[in-house]
Image 1 (cartoon, rainbow, N blue to C red):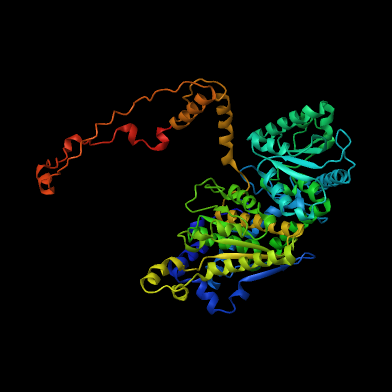
Image 2 (tube, rainbow, N blue to C red):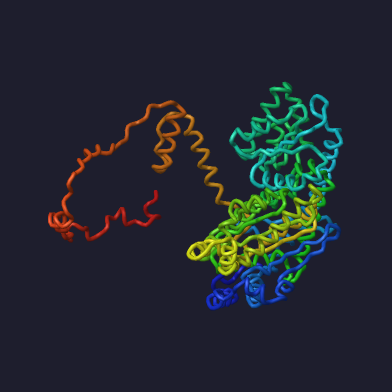
Length: 622
């Protein structure tokens, strides 16, 4: 057994039991509002600042959480007991911590900008990484400079990335976030198999000046390849000649034969490796769309920012480690306060896709219910991650945060400087004021006394005040982290993304689950292929459950214009409506005429449940 593998069941770990005992006895008395208002040193103890080489600071304030010094000590003890540091080192050293697939986890090697070698399976992975990065640099420079031209000799103006999952969400999020440093073509993303998605994008572009990136590791992903074939057909309707494909289609894949068969030149294929998980692939050649949009220099700054956070994660003590602190606070809420979700709330419009990106990163990584040893867990694992940018989110769901019954920890994210100082920065000043206000109000709440005073000042009196005050008050003490950066640069974005990656990894370590596979999505893909063939004919299908069979039948009736079938058991006709009695009998007369309640005949009740009903779910299945 490797030194990083768990040997103790989580809920039997002494460090866990100490946390549980403390929660049981003291959790009700942990009042964030009281602690912040009466402990002037609390912020100093529960915040840290990381200074980057050139891009300013990252501040993490976690003082507005349901924690105290002792809780944090117990959480840090848990991190050590669950071998967080050993697992971290094993990942960076190229050990095969993806145990269910027998793979190393080396997305961090992709942003290793130094000269260190990184080995797995007896091979240094850095030389091939450098080769691909050089290929990306040469290609993006040729496109941006106009040396790479379309089939009519025109410069590329638009790039369409065809991918799904990690081949779409990551690059899409980054290009949106870094639009302000764009130096290359506009980039569009198509992921949905719904033809509307592709059609809407194709209407916006000129085939003579459009470059397609087909981003698929296997080059067999149904959604991506279907979109790619449709895009090629659209392109050839205009270009007419197959030879034109070479100037307008490139691939990011590992399947050379399939890429060549599609018509893409081998020189225009960018490779990556099986130790790069899809949700971590923006750091690989999957990030080609990013590099085309912002230039390779800016893309490498993104990598440098992630490497900066990697170094911090590797070297900082547990007690000062941003990803570990965030992970432990999340564990505290998920496993002790039974929270089911957390919200990502970026106060920067450029980060509007960040919540969706972290949603995939977290829920695909830690949405697991079996430990690495194959045992079903008896504790909660990955939460639901969701969110929207402020202030739009404030007018959508903050009401629930403030006065609802669910506890939803929040991560507020803010850049101090804006790329768009509209009206001399007025917009951003207002945005920052809302950022600070919401974080404080979640903690502080609104007292009955304050609500009463406001109502009386507004002219309410007596019972009106008493009735209204309950609806206008809320208790506060709602937990939140604040993450503040100087400015949203490529470097800072890379650091933030790596911070969340490592946070999620640490939680997976503590839960003893594999954060780097996603077997749950495979069965649906397989069944979809079966159903796709069933949808091609009007024949009745009975091979599924009654619900799916019924939905299929309904779809086929409309698709093939089949006659509607009568209901198998039509309901009996309604009895005639009784006439209204103009002079109803008194209640006493009605009661006298009622029949007495018949006692239940015990012999009519079976002594045993029929065997077919009494079967367990497993026994009832085929």
